[in-house]
Length: 248
Image 1 (cartoon, helix red, strand yellow):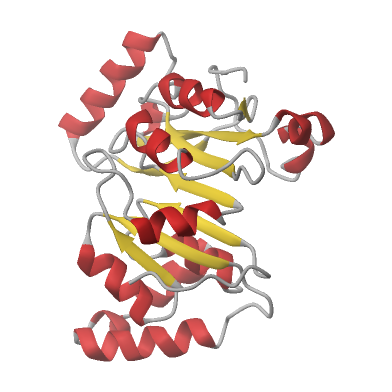
Image 2: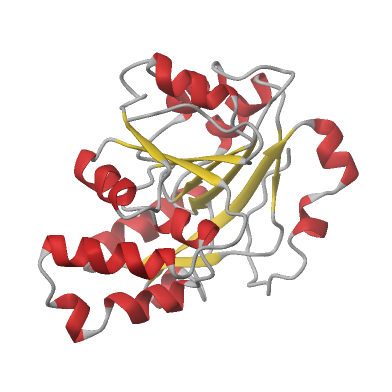
């Protein structure tokens, strides 16, 4: 599914991409609320799969930014990746399991050109094993940034250690978390609260209100961190108090 790269366009590799929500936000003039509005209508909900694909193709094309990044999606769910490519969200996709296997030659070539690797909520499903295999395909001359939203229930330290072994310094956005999604049921909530308790983290105002929360991590070469620390890059975000902090 992977094809030749356009080296003049910034390349983002989105891990655990599913149906391409991150790609939609990167490539189109859209917010999450806009996506909720689109898929929450009775008309769209009633469409058959081919009708929905036609609808989505037109929807995203009409909102495409003038100079969108190239987005390569990676996931083990073939149907999700194929749909995201079909409707124009992913420029190309790779259905691969790097917990089990090294990246294919095609994916390795794409990774060598990546400017940014993203993962939102996937850490825990994938581990430092996958991250190491990905970064082995990059070089010190063109090391991509790595941005992650990681559930507070998951320890990011092994991933940060792997990133450090590849020359990337990890910063955490201080005093800030973001809601990820509501708990599916009481057993999921109880598991999350137990995981937080084991780490000594306070769920008050976050998971205690019925939602997973994520920490924001950004890993970059040391010279980039020195030039612009994470706080100066993301100072437009509204903070929510967080008790956890991982230094790079």
